[in-house]
Length: 587
Ligand code: TEU
Ligand code: CA
Image (cartoon, rainbow, N blue to C red; front, side, top):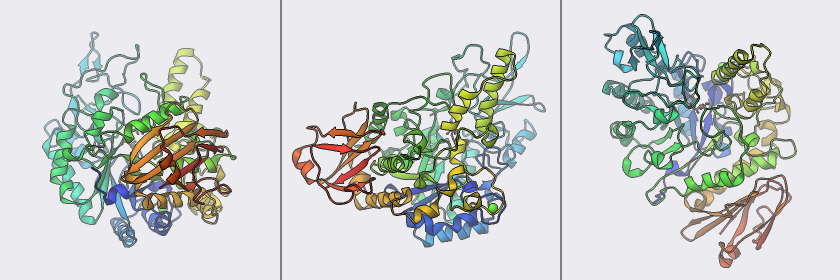
């Protein structure tokens, strides 16, 4: 059921271009900067690069608002720079994925300008336009009550035509109308443009939102008194989404050997998300599901972005277990990630980013990643154990529009409630320090020179304060660094296919300190032990692990340098795990 395939074995490295490396001193990362770091990536063990959007864009949402799908944003370079980068990637035996953002465009895209130009424009129906509603008092209201992901209504009024257009994100990100076949043809066409240039795959932004629920009914009122209501359940997995993705597969993907991953937020419904991936459905290779990285988020409504909820290890394990065992017989395939450009750093959320435990817990989380079945994704800086920037940073240092809109919405509400200007926002700042998207967006920390060696100019965003001691150059020179460990961990995964393809069996699901699981692939076995605490724990291996299997297992990787790592040590019936210790045994 799991034929081995290159994109299943692959380690994908996500690059956030604006913050990776600046080649010309304007403070903005660029394509030539990426091209200059390809040996660094190849040496780490990366097979595929995924670039967050580099297309021409007004950058209202950091490039997830595209005004021309067939050009490179000038701040990142030119099409010639892209071709040169791709040639360098291919010359090293790597591949390159593009970010395909086609639920919405920029409002500055020619398609939208034409759509907006008049009600009778040929492209009017390429976007989602609706007339106003009127309330009992005769006041004009948006067509429904849905709240946008980045706050406010999903509807923006256009005076000239007396209609509203839909935007699930910013008003500068109007949603395309996928029910119009001409829109779908235009998307297939732009995909072919990049495929013809040589790109090897696509990460598809919010692809589970492209089909809108007919009639666009009001969302249930979950926060009485609020004008706009959380409608995420109505956004996701609309009625025609699978029809459209099967058409994409038929018209584009089936003609090429590509890697595809759909981003599918706002739902944790495993059966619904499996439909995108099951091979017989002919849609996508895999999806990014967010059940795991939402474990530390408040449950239910109202939606509270960037708010931290204390989590327990048993609930974390249950989520990993659910997805690792999901419809495997039918060929469901996972993507393994715990960081991206939309969240805080893993070591600051799931590990321990204090000086004492940062490196060892970052390595433990690396083991959590490489020891799961699925395609591996590493976000830039994760291989260095980069952590969130400090609580002391002011709200002005947060550049993300989602952060700013959330902060301002709460601020205005509190001012209105109290009638005072100086309201307490410390709880919101606590949440942002843990969860804001900004933490993944600070410049990469290359070396100890000014601005972490990211730029010779003024960086577009403040560099994290710890770069003098915590950077790639220092870690490359240290055999015990987080970087060195990631390199070994990625290699181990390639050497032991049981880690990529094996079945997943959870041990001790209710244990609150240790995450232990077995992997089985034909005659091969693996056992993984992860101590998620800053305490020493004696972990007893129960009868689920047969004695002969235990006897055959040998230690293959551990995150304690002075310990028995890689000595091939055999496994006893009880294991003494040190603080944040991680061990992988294989047979
Ligand atoms: O993200 C989808 C998305 O809405 C969430 O991941 C979002 O970042 C989170 O809910 C914030 O609270 C994708 C992109 O990854 C993101 O960067 C874009 O902003 C978004 O789509 C719109 O294109
Ligand atoms: Ca630059």
